[in-house]
Image (cartoon, rainbow, N blue to C red; front, side):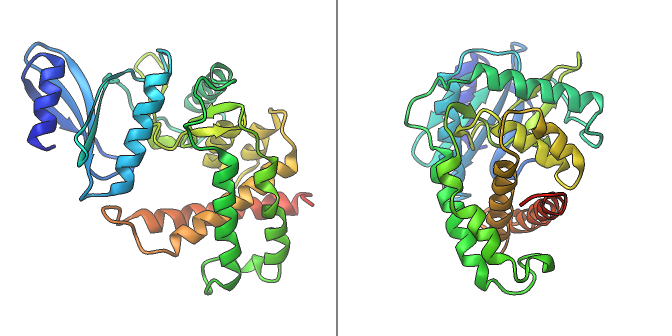
Length: 298
């Protein structure tokens, strides 16, 4: 944490920071630190500089915009203050006493409270409380569609073997997706294990709003369901929503291809594990696509 960010945090909290604890997990470079002040106050600060990764600054600025627009909620840490000097961006947030959820069992206690959180938040954020400044999922899907168009000539290993001879059919499904996605809700769009916490009382909390967008009300349920995409639990979770089954499959195809494309690119600055993560996520998503198509998808 640079001295300027630490000084700002201390000034905001009104006391000297006497203890820090770095947090692990996630992929953004920079610091993710729990603070304790001489006066006993606690907070969480995350910060990144342009030299580490410029895109992370954009994500942090988007998160600030979103959190400033949202009302307080027990399942969202409150934003106390934001710092932006053009080179470094930092967020000072409510410190959450919590642990990562155990999502190994899609029907387990942690999975249940996380599902409830996602459903409750979707109801709260439909219609979206934010205006047109936020990015929109149809436009995002158009970018993913462009990545899919490049996959036809991808080298061996980028796509799973079962897609051989089916690229044209898969792309045909992807091609119309942007026109079929709605934008009625504010979506977190990054609902995964390392962006979730379980408080000591068992309540779930969602963090990190940098990927947020305007999209369909079931989008965050889709993102959470990706945790179990290789299994029928994915289908079960999405079946509880009023969304066409083929639309779910087509979004999954699009996401799988986009992740495969990302995994074939050089790792971004400051994110040495990002490409490998994308390759692994693409493999899981394509396994889900294969299962759904084999189970009766058109």
